[in-house]
Length: 434
Ligand SMILES: *Cc1c(COP(=O)(O)O)cnc(C)c1O
Image 1 (cartoon, rainbow, N blue to C red):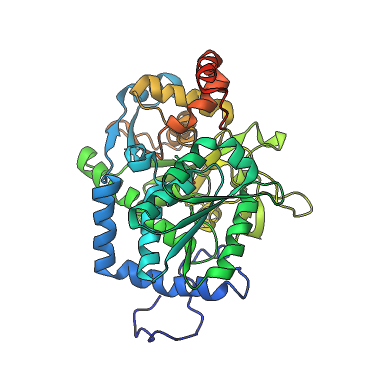
Image 2: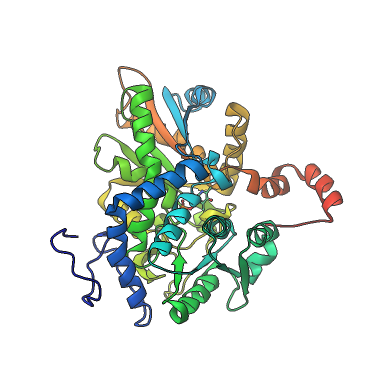
């Protein structure tokens, strides 16, 4: 964007793309939605450059979300890593699990609802798969006093009763979507249909670095507070930048948020970890970088899981937050350029890593985050092979702990502690919520 003269309001020229991701990204929406998307593309860069907007956003992050989140050393995990991988590494954990609502998603939601208020919107809509983004959006709406409608596939409503109850308690209306397979992609379609009819007063909060421009760039900007904090904390704690930064990738927002601060540091290797579920060969996975092909989906050009005849392929992962058939266009770009590398971790490996971090560091991570933890042995071995091992001390590896694991205990118990599940089932009348 140029900073020359701002054209007065009322200009109808199509604004340039806010996110330039080479052949990925773009603005693939219907005629009816184009004005709303273009309004955002005009207004987001202005808001982001406005000192008053920045002050308010950072005040909310401090007073309400609880930022800055700390960086914790993980000495016992690092010891294990030496035993398992034979590599001397110092693991540092960026603790997004300590945020209000237990994950990074709230950073994006408070920022987008703040923007909606600035634009004079009086109503918020969102779509949600497992419910985590719906809960974060409902939280931000309660904080700002705006009405909130969350579209959710009817299948997901049935599976995620706890998150549905949370959204309702927060005052949001949850609208079950019965069309199609009654899951996330159908909820996205329903939210878009609502937006077409209500764009004048409604803002659509997208939950990851996905969708038509400017969403991928906007959500990255709102999440880069993770990387900005972590970079400064690492310099202060260790006196140097990390050798590698590691994050799990669903749509890719927690990863883009931490990567963004290190893109200009060529010595810092970036690793994204996606879910291979039950194995790529099984077809039940969410490994979009590994197995996806280029296509247009959800308003953007990116990598997408699709069948041979170009139909959208349902994703699978044990962690609901990684269970998405697309990936943000900036990740597709970073992958194509080789600036970031992407690895896969299976359901079983993630369950093991959840226990690993819990038992060695006293931190129960979200199953999404557990994918990033599980990849650590392979990552430090790769760094060592590429003779990145440093003569002056251990490798420094910064991992984004995107969220805490309370929400995943039921899934965990089903797989690893069924006796505990029986006890809870007896008390709660056999609740199932995943
Ligand atoms: C939603 C979620 C993710 C995946 O979303 P991204 O946009 O890829 O960050 C990862 N971790 C947690 C804890 C989540 O709730």
